[in-house]
Image (cartoon, rainbow, N blue to C red):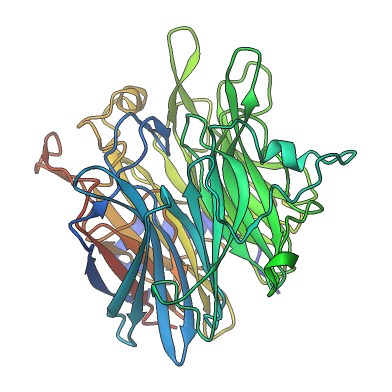
Amino acid sequence: MNAPIIAPATRLAAALTLALLAPAALAQTLPAAGTTNSGTYTLPNSRTTAGEYPWVIRILSYHPGAVVPRRMYTASCTTGGVRKLFASITTRSTTGTEEGMIISGDVASTGVVSNFTSRSFPTCKDMNGIVAASDCSTVTAMCRRPAGSTGATRDLVAALPTTTVGNDWRNWLTAEPGDDQMWLYEWRGAPAVPTSSLTGYNSYIVSKAIGGGWEFGHQNLVMSSTHYGVAMKATTGKDANGTQHQGDSFVAVTRASVPANTAIDTSRGWIWACAHGHTLSNRPVLSTTGKFGAFCMTDWTNVANDTKGAVWMRVEGQAAGKAHDIYASLVPGGYTELRFNGGHGPILPTANGEFIGVLVGSPSPSIAERSRIGLVRFNSVGARLSAPVWVKSSATHFLSYPQLVSLGNDSTGTPRYLLGWAQMMASGTNVTTSFDNPSPDQTQRLATKYFVQEIDANGNAKSQVRELTHGWGEQDQMVSLGAGRAGWVYRPDGRIKLSTDGTTVTSMPSPNSTGVIFMTYTSTSM
């Protein structure tokens, strides 16, 4: 039987009292945090990680210029008793050209990652989401290619009907002639080896409506035994003012061993928009009952004249349900200044067909408050079960960079998760001023400290906290590596370094790193 998402009021009050009166004693009752290990891969041919696209809206702040690497996607599987960890990234040459790359590493029982191999994809402007079957028999990645690209095994957009009453999928997935395309690269084998130039793959065009100016949102996918669920930040055709609107599409693609039978399943997913407003982020999920869904954030609450943003959950076949409103900073004239005091991280399926997600926000989104880390639960159709449970907060700093990954069940059969978060800018004596004018600059975009802790589905701590040197990207997502283990990939030590008094930046990491670090976490109490 699943535990309730929120403990009774009396139990919660008692727990808070204990935490306030005797934090040291309380911490001693918790098992030690797990161990971390790693392996570093130097990118070939003097390449570096590509920087974030300019003017991207992220948690806490927009990015007018690149200060972090572009998002890195991960997947994992096991073949022949060897645990594989894949990274799908975008790299940059010394002359500024960008292309996709997939990297594979072997994870030892110690957590050390080695035996790296990689493959570059020069025709891919970006390499995005990646998934793998548990036995590595299929590995599939998303490749963003320029408008007009040809040579796919099958163009799934062109294969859609040109005229179907009540079905506008083809039109919505085509948009403007200059928009980029999204391809799926699919490797099959025993095992599939996406990093070998000797292995072929099937390629499918799933959208011709990518880009259109703004680059916020995600390009990611999940996989069931019968379908791919492809979540894409997308654009529409131009309106009367020549503007393309920004949203997302969730495209379900049938998986077939014969390419001719691979097709877009228009009975599933959605054509446009996870929720009300412009899609700022969208993370796909597959429920344990086989339903696709997405955790997303938009710049509107669906309330007239409301200037806040909102985090939503949508399951295919259902309307979006709101998780929480997000405070937004305004400039004179009442326009949102591309800064939201929150957002969300991963969304995970639970064993009973429901969902659990991690978000950033504050209890009172109508005012500026220090951002916190919260958990939120949804039922099988995406309806919120209760208000967010705020599990991490700081009296001196904003928090962000949320992570949540399954570690499996502990010895009692209770699901356990690894929670990750980061310390951001100081809140100072006036939270509103500190949010609008962070000091030092860039601490609203770059983490100053990273932390992880094991928790249960109610947010109860199951281990002590561990501070890390090598963290993750704000939009990246950890991946399960089996019972009690998790992994992620990022540039080595992505923290911004400050002076002792916290007022001056002493070292800032470059978004263009010559290598990436494959990190692993192993629980010592499961």
